[in-house]
Structure formats: C-alpha cells, structure tokens
Length: 184
Image (cartoon, rainbow, N blue to C red; front, side, top):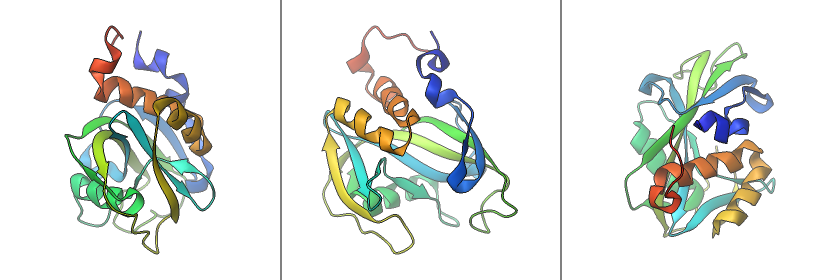
C-alpha cells in the first residue's frame, strides 16, 4: 500500500483560496530554489506541538523563507517565532505541496513564480521560550504539546489534510512507533 493510498486527503490536488494557488502534495523532495515556505511537525516527547493563532486555528509552526535564507535557517527561525521551540534532533523531510500560483506576481519579489513548494518536515524539539510573534506573521496566542490523537483532531482546524500529514510524520519520523506498517 502506498502513501497515496494511505493518505488520500493529503495527496488530493486542491486549491488554496487564501493564496490563489493550485497545490499537489508529494513525498518527493522539492529543489531548494522552489522552497518558499517550511513547516514542521514537531515532536516534544510523544506529543505533537501545535500553535493556536488569533483566529482560533491550531497549526504546525513554520512560515515564509526570507531572501538568502537557507532551509535550515528558516526552519530554526520559524520554530522560535511561532512556537518558542528549538530542534533537538535531526530534521526529516516529509514532502512538499507543489504549488502553481494564479497571482500576477510572487508574494515576495525574490520568490520563484508561478511555481513554488511548501516543504514539510518532522523534528524533535524542546519548548524553551515564548513565541516571538513578529509583526509580519500570524499572531500566536497559545503553544501546546498535545497527545497524538488530540493533535490530529485540533490540526483539522487548519484543513482536513493536516491530520494525514501528522500521521505521515509519525510513520516516517518515528518508525519504531509503527513496526509492521508498510512503506512506499
């Protein structure tokens, strides 16, 4: 059984209205030059870290890559800004939403356009500070490490496919927790 079979919502082509983008998830890693955003499924022990914003949406921490910033630098900055988190182990790439923008110009002038990618990863973290909440980002009002079942339920406030993304992270990042599950 393939990842597409096990995670159909995650792999279904869709349109993100908020950014006027057509997107398709793939476990194939994107080329560095296409990556505009990096988000992480963060594990604090056996729990999954979610951030609640001022719209009452529970989301995975992450955000937009700055000009000249490496993927690793962006991930570390975004974890600090949104979750007050610091990686404690290796980062595992899960896949990406490959996007084609329908807008006339990129979100930021240095970003690729119209094709780009949102990179998803998994990482073990420690929550050791408060989110910094920069002015040009979502306003995070709460950060909490949730048991897996609760994280999956709450992540659906950011889209039904997010539950499958978290399940994929558990499968790929924590393989010992999934002994006997088939790979792709």
